[in-house]
Length: 456
Image (cartoon, rainbow, N blue to C red; front, top):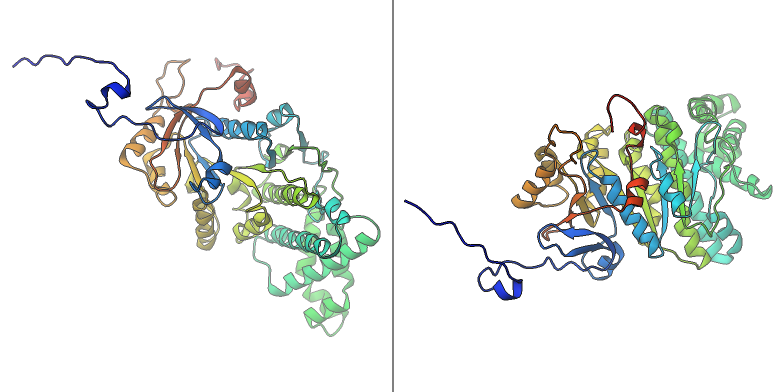
């Protein structure tokens, strides 16, 4: 039996909606950072987490970005950052492990500090951008800001101790750290400076009356024995593998006129996880005070914050998920759009304890927006705990993960393609194209550009 081929008709959706009533736009507004065009309807798609929050579409401005390496995770995060900066946002990259945001930061007129041995150093006890705000404040506001700095100092110092000793901090050690930090801070403030870790070590070695009371030591000898482990851990911060990085005054300074800032720790990328984790924690704590500082000064500026390779700072020791969350928690509900970028949720399984893994999954699930690039089916199964996907969406995302042909010069099938999800809504499949200047600034394969061996 012969069947005639069907005839092809073309028309607008207004004209042919009676024949095919299922063609409809996704309803996404163009307003926001232009990401690309809808792959089904060709309508332009804009992304503005702040506006989506005000419109009631999401409950927080966190953005989770996940895709296989090489398909454009960094490209879309940099597009979002560039667009938001154009709309008046500040931008901060705390702990840029690979240094890949430095060209963009400098192109946007910002400052990228390189942290490493022989380069810039960060004092984890530095009040950072909040120092000027504290000095300018009076009364209860001054006390509030001072308590904010104290809380960050204690949380960060506790995290560094956890990293060095690869284990939790006891209740007695926490109380000792609090007394030592307060004493060192008071002495430094009198001298017009910031406390540093060696100051804390000296306070613990000397042993104040309060320290002796906490330890319940009968004499100096017993006190020295009971505090030996804690003092040795702090001394490792000054003499061990991270010597010269966090044991002196900060050599970086915050300028309120600087809207775009990055702490580039790529010089430490080849170090062990504990060194990188310490650098990321210290960088995050220092940069997180930018928001608080702008609020305190009355010159509020919304900020987009980029957290790439987040798990490198969480897997170094048990308990770092909670401590990391505590260090930066004060940024929430303060006008911050946070971009958390990873290539696989299996990174969660590398965290030391099940408690850490559960908390990390919670951190991921709390993001209001999820952006997915090409991923395999196993990864999408893991993602079901964060965002529901229809069968059609799963098929689309996995098709972007398919290997390209072996012919050179052809782009990966998933390059520049993303599914934007939020809650139970159907996702927006978007194809993003880059301008020539973006291709240059967003390129993360520059290391291969001048090599031989036939690599183009």
